[in-house]
Length: 154
Image (cartoon, rainbow, N blue to C red; front, side, top):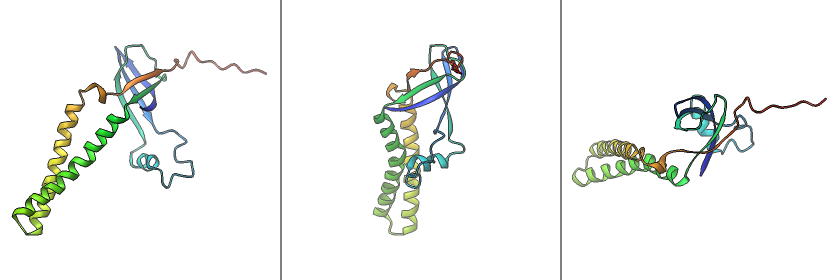
């Protein structure tokens, strides 16, 4: 299970809007030159994302929620997104090469195959979107921020 802590932004009638992102310590370790997480976080605009989930328990803004998704679902989604267009590209180029020897047509067939693979991946992803095993689940709900009090001793 891939787990991530998120912060509640808004909760209303069983729907919670959560914000999650990379930890503030990400990028400070010595392995950042070879770290995939560090490089992926640098690609995004600010590394903060939002997610809307159904959570029946009333939540307060600022409350922490642990969200998880099974590794198998994440792996299948990644394979769908990356391999389907790549396989389409190779198949499109190979099929055109059976009929034509001009490399320009083979190139165009590869591009059309890649685009077809992309649209096939989108179609399958919209089908998977409704399946329960591809939905994130709430693992833990932290205490509301106003419940936690720190007492200073002098």
